[in-house]
Image (cartoon, rainbow, N blue to C red; front, side, top):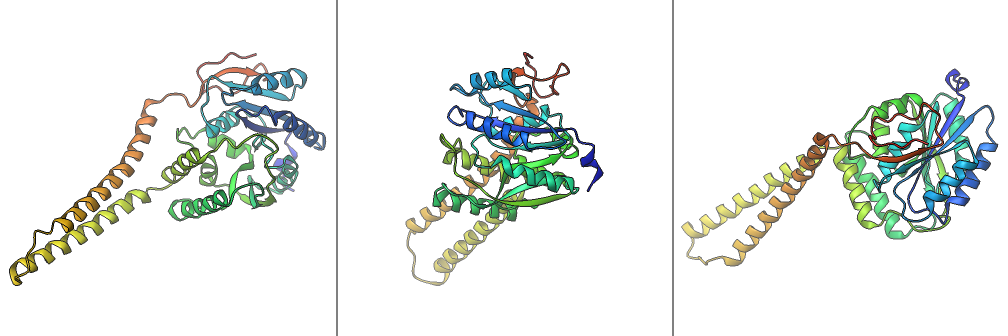
Length: 332
């Protein structure tokens, strides 16, 4: 057994929440049962309310008042799931940090196996989904395709069929906290930092209650963030596409010249001309769009705005969490 696990006295569990009033009671119950089964580890449960518009925040405040292990970060508005995860990582004080969603699709009981792997000396133990019941065939197919496309494009290998559900050592957490990028894809960032990592296969369960907070539009945006944050291959592909179009255009020019100089066949060629113009115009717009996505990320980075604004920190010790990313805090 690795001796760094022996020194651990605190496990931080980070749970991002957004409009989870239907499930949050059961989530607290399951997490408390998980905590009761731990031996030689204290636990802090860090909930991050990502600007919920239902009663999630009020219920979490009542749980924090009843249980000293429950801590709460309240965002001033909705900043997004990946930013909520980041805020929880920033605030975590444990020697190991677990990321888990509030919807109970990732069973808290699996964390016991993650802890065992960590005690063997692994710095990152990420859950790999073997089954995903309750999800549509379309979502399963698109998720499968996305992970494989991302791995093909990414400069860093990213594990397939893996979400944010994972355990990370303090070394990994400190490294992540030093990474300031704004368009965050946490699972890719964890792969990028390296250290000793291993997979833990598990069966995902159906969502306990409520609805997914990732509709198709958000999933597409998330996929774009993942690809553009870890690969410049789309830019390289736009160059290849431009060269291909130039070759086709040159072939068309040669064809037109041959017809004009060596045959008696000559027609205005309006249809061919329109097809060529529309095709080349579409390719140009695609390439400009790809370039614009990268430039937009540069624009967001250079503004240097904080990643999030927290209106309240509840249940933390007097020293409080690290506040380098959040300029507005009302600690309680």
